[in-house]
Image: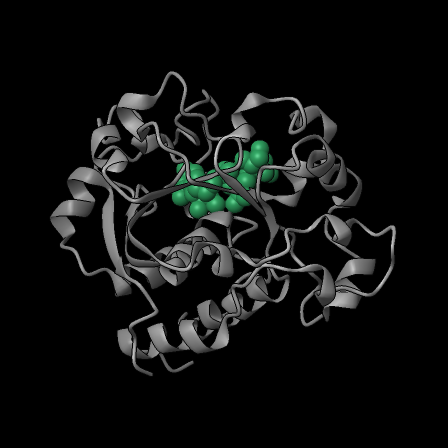
Length: 276
Ligand code: NCC
């Protein structure tokens, strides 16, 4: 297809991806549905606007980076899934404002989402890939993971902690743009939590620094900074079109290549001020 310019890409993201979170009224009416546990306001209504934000990827290459202090200077910090802070503060910082979770992590009991204190800090946001082009009702009948019961249980146990669910259209709306920006047909797997988190923060913040999504000189086969597991696919993608996600984000980078090489850092503009 025709590749997009950076400006066209930003406008496509701003106007075509609805990265909002769900409220009860978005779902079919049913008194005992999990949807009664959704927060009353959307994340965007609750947070309004933030200044400088950080997105911390879970990549092994952030290990030994000593980026922690820099990451903590941001107004808000987003992390992913089971990525810990405790024991890794020097490299990943201490602050957790948001944590983006995939529905697999919430649904599979052996992953200990209900028990692990890691999840008690900051606001949680979960996403689950709908079938391509499904509407909310179809998704509700056929989610990728059956997260309903454990989502409700977490909310009952932790009613004060915000726990949002991303609009299920967002992932495929974003996928369409990744495909549009790619020189060949890409895998029909949904985008990674990484790219969804980046977009979420571009939506909420004036400026977004992303760490080790585009890997620094520390790049290796180490999948996560907090595990020994090695797999190149964690960085390059298999199920998720990670390589294409990274090419897309590279195009939007306001920073220089040196910052990528040394710090794994890219700087992206917020979408709010953007004229399309
Ligand atoms: O590994 P994961 O991702 O939790 O990583 C979060 C995001 O960081 C970026 N990343 C990670 C590792 C790496 N070497 N390079 C990177 O750029 C990616 O953008 C990634 O999205 C996910 O996206 O939700 C994912 O979740 C895991 C797993 O479910 C969770 O960690 C929960 O345990 C998936 N792994 C498996 O299912 C085995 C992974 O495919 C995607």
